[in-house]
Length: 246
Picture (spheres, rainbow, N blue to C red):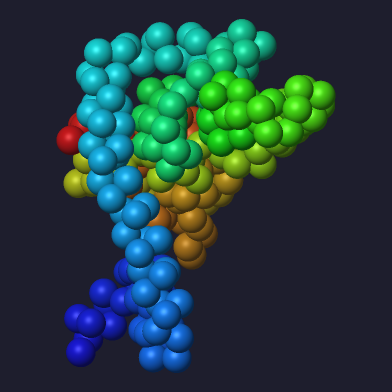
């Protein structure tokens, strides 16, 4: 029973969907049948598309250097990176869910958050084939005005998101952790209790009984800089760090 509860806890969304289907099947079987057929259609579509997308991301990961992604899509790419991201999203093919693994791979390779927002947004709402259909059904004037306003909104959203969301808050570095076997150590006998390390790297140090204490040995690539800074600025030089990678 405990295992079942743990499974449900780990897959809350899936459990909610199954419960919804069961409820519909009991009270509205016709709706349940229709919903199941619609869901089956999208599952079949994902099974067809996702292997190709995952193969593409694997090839890019293996063959495109990180420095190239950082140059054209990274934080320092500026306006050039924003325009390139916009074009990449606009000319991409496939449904929006296919963009998520691609964007995660680009983030791991050094793309900035703002450029990822631009790619996802352009992919979702201003792909070129969609614009052609929009002209056909709604007219060119409608398409142009909507495109201009949407483009302005995309760049505004990208800027705002990059200011609010931080890279270390995203689940993109799970395979880039350092060894957790005693990588950080503190000589508490000589610690003067200044608290500087806990201010610089609060995810890894805290003060307890006026001495610095290690909270976590789990250090990802984004947190490495703050840990090193805490070590360098320690006035008593009591923190040691071994950077052995997995």
